Image 1 (cartoon, rainbow, N blue to C red):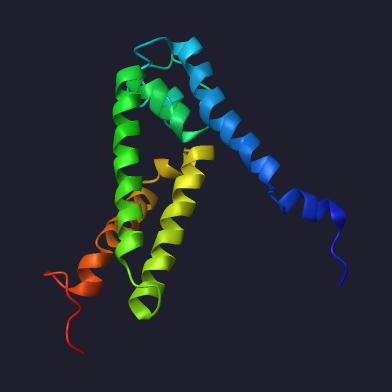
Image 2 (tube, rainbow, N blue to C red):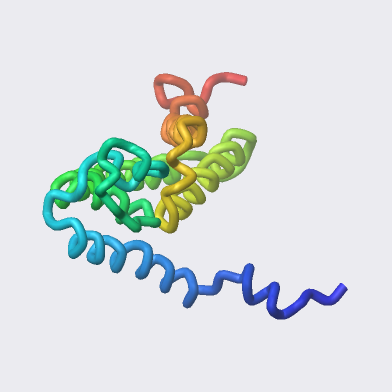
Length: 164
């Protein structure tokens, strides 16, 4: 079967497209949000799906990406606090990656969970709307928790591999 070129161009995300999306949905969206809503932002829930139906219907936001949503809802200080938390989580994930064994059932499970967590991070960077669903947020948090606890369930509570 021959695959249509238009389709491959549409689904193929090259390096140029990925960096453009990170720039536009990450940095430029946060700067645009600052210009729109100022230092303190609009308040919690203002960029949530369905916020226009609430009591504060006068607030109009356009935020699509996760970082711009955090920025408009939390303001500059809250955004930097959320950024510090995100950096701490990424650092902990890298520590788990260094500690975990490369092969075996535990290593494969860890790599799978790490892939799911990385995909959720990338998805949140581009669009926050899926994370308005409590089930998806709970599932993503559970996957993150399982990934961060991988050294404990792989090596046991004292850091040594349990006897098989």
